[in-house]
Image (cartoon, rainbow, N blue to C red; front, side):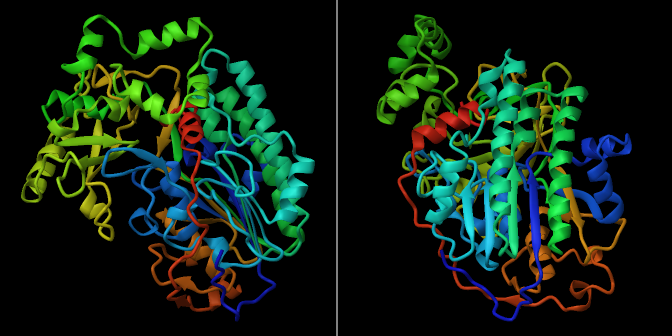
Length: 535
């Protein structure tokens, strides 16, 4: 890993970034107002605070790189969990795809753990340490570095789990809560292990448990019990930072809210003649005609004790793909007849025009892309809930949203309040939400606390891309010229060093992160299904 460090910084300055995945500002503020979370109340009264606007769409693989780099996706390069190639095949995004340097490559020494999209890691250098987060296929030499940390990690936390697949626990909520507590405890054990390193200037640690909980369970009693555990962890971190004269930043990548229905964007496109499914002809047509579909196949396999997990773990991906392409059902892109399709949804919000220059089976020539995109935007903006007549989607032009990347999605969609966009090609455009209680919303949380922070400051209009520039400036370090975010200057005490120093910038060289590796695609896809992010 290449460290791009300014040699003139004040080595005594420190910053601790505590990430709490999916914590929404409104819910947290309500618990604080009720007097339930004393440590968060301290942050509110003694520091700076406010809602933190996420990326568009508000999704984990997009937002955490934006927090870490201070750039929007058209500069850092990640748009979904999985990237799409010209033949419509998917593979996981990884740290090797992040084009801009994250905070821990600009500040040394750094301690980093459980940040999504950081696998594979490489040796972070002397006195630093990194443990990768979500999208890590397995705990190996590319997940924990350096080797000295890996040896201690293996010895002290042998039962560490990368994640918990909440969607597998539908109907078993009590078991889920017990297992979630275990995962959270091992995260806490890791944090305590890393806290023994006294040489860091940047400490960046993420807990993903609130996101996992809120997807499956959304009731005040359960949520409050979990948030009290987060409050206890926050108290420990505050004491730790206070003893080491470190500023503390507490952030979430997005917010959360309950949902009632899910939206199949690909079904909307199919109903409008912009996407053609495979069900009507060939082997899939024959199978569909005799009632053989994904649900029936899965039901028969489950009766025989064969789960999706076992299939994915046992069979080569080529075999899984072979049958998925031939058995009708909600397989997302497997169900699309691309040579007769003009537009399609990939992932959780990325809509592509089937451009002949971009895709192998493209149908839309370059001169017709703009016209087709306007038609797709019109269709998606006009889509309504057949029961209520309410609009379903907020639709963004990809060229306007991501002007710096010609390969960005053509269109980006976000679900309206109470709805969630799913990647599957469903039978109906709108269906009841089953086995999912809540989903991402745009506004997460931002707190800053410490000697440099002005007490009781309300932060307005903060974006996720503002975090990295603010942290860097508070450390006396230069902000990358390519950063999209701003230093949140209003949070600093007028007499503090960050308030009296001008923001300095630097044109850092091109990022050279961990080299791309043959990521275990099957394992990652299986885990994403268990997290509700793939079908």
